[in-house]
Length: 68
Image 1 (cartoon, rainbow, N blue to C red):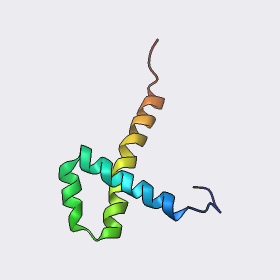
Image 2: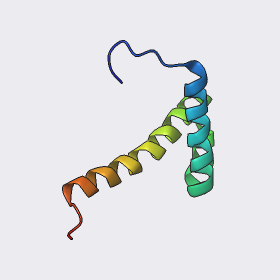
Image 3: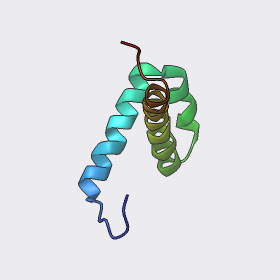
Image 4: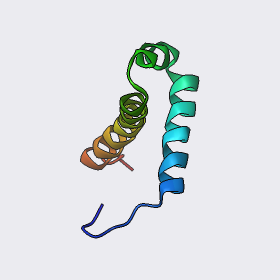
């Protein structure tokens, strides 16, 4: 995020909801383990969990472009 960016509360809530749905569908053990966390931390850690693999794939692909 850049400095001065305002985040719409509804958009943020939708993003956290999407992270919850993706985590529940694709990583059930992680999803259920995070239920022990307080709600705010639970949503944040699930969002990080969903975000990090996507970034790692992106970085890996950019470091090793496919050979033609």
